[in-house]
Length: 297
Image (cartoon, rainbow, N blue to C red; front, side):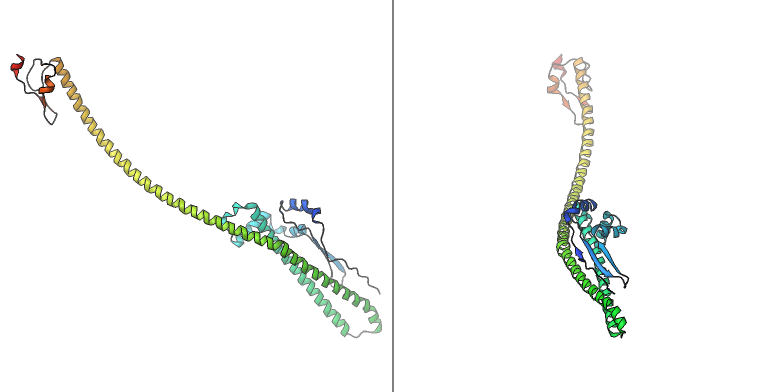
């Protein structure tokens, strides 16, 4: 019997501009988009052929169990041990982290698919080898001939698919992963510079705080001294006020002709004579005058 096999291109690159707007909207307006489809043909244990389509939206749906982009970025950042200052560049840094994480998962998926292909090819080679070593009748050989041809054709198709898959992985690594790693390293260095600047500012602030505390201590000491001086001055001022009041009262009595306190003199005295002749004791408690009464007779 005849077995017809169709060989399709195992790798097809679709038009990027066709899905650019939708991809950016779905990826949160991120510049990284992957809309290329991988169409592969393989044998499913002799039960026929099937196609597997892999695209960026499909991969994101497969990774939907990981949570939102923010949760994935936060988890990835915690695993990698990034600094707490990542809020300085939230959008760019999140794009880099999510892009690296998704590409890593996609690379793991492609690696598993490649291992599955290699396993399938190895199994087909074993089957082909065992079939060639087995003795069949002429009728069985006539029936197995087209099947062996189909297996060989499928083997060549899988080799071609594997080669194209290698090319795709190399393209992803050179065009996407390498620039993302460069951007990642640049951002990491920038964040280190920011952390150093922040640490320096914190140290300077601590020094300024210590200086301010010392100045406040000196100011508090000066205020205490000023308070004590004011209290002492106030006490002296009260004493001086009492003394001044006594002097004013004595002068008023003198002008009224009451007499000189402590002298026993009841007469009047001339203007200005008191200032010239008066004498005061040092205690200011009492005042007396040495008066010649003959001058006023």
